[in-house]
View 1 (cartoon, rainbow, N blue to C red):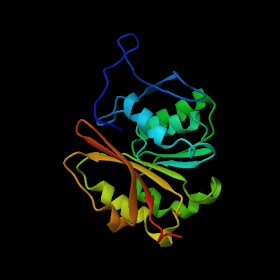
View 2 (view 1 turned 135 degrees about the vertical axis):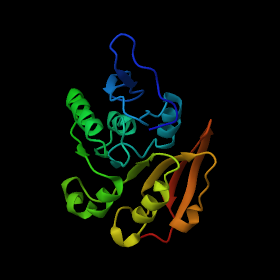
View 3 (view 1 turned 30 degrees about the horizontal axis):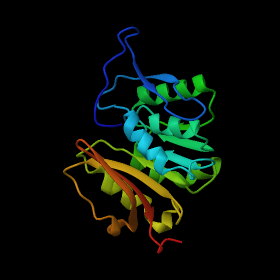
Length: 207
């Protein structure tokens, strides 16, 4: 997800996204024309993965509001060991599976609500390696989802993260959050138009 919906491809009548780095650099993939589904633009992705240099290779990643899956696909292209895609919309989730098949990539897709996935996380974590090293959070704006998700993710008893986990998130420019309240500190931040982007990590209190 991101802030601007790209036009349909005039030749095919379908939407496409482009992977900008790694093994599948310049590879184009189709994505569903679903309401509110907008891949994060190239420029913002370039900034994000510059932030993640030195961390992405071999990482276990969670793309919690996957949408087009562009952040997860970019992570896989750049050497992530595993990505778990979570997407509520059935049609969109099926497109994620089809694109993974096109790429011959091994990853998990869960067609479920983000909070529901978090409530059943421990049932699935053993399938792909446990603690998330990198979490991508780009929920629909202005629906109060970000605070609910962060409370769950940062609950130390849940075991989603450890002190080395990195959390990338976006929110509308007019919103603000007290990251200390979640036990998080800001490593990087940027703004683009009406969107604020952050790279966060747990503070030293999380073991």
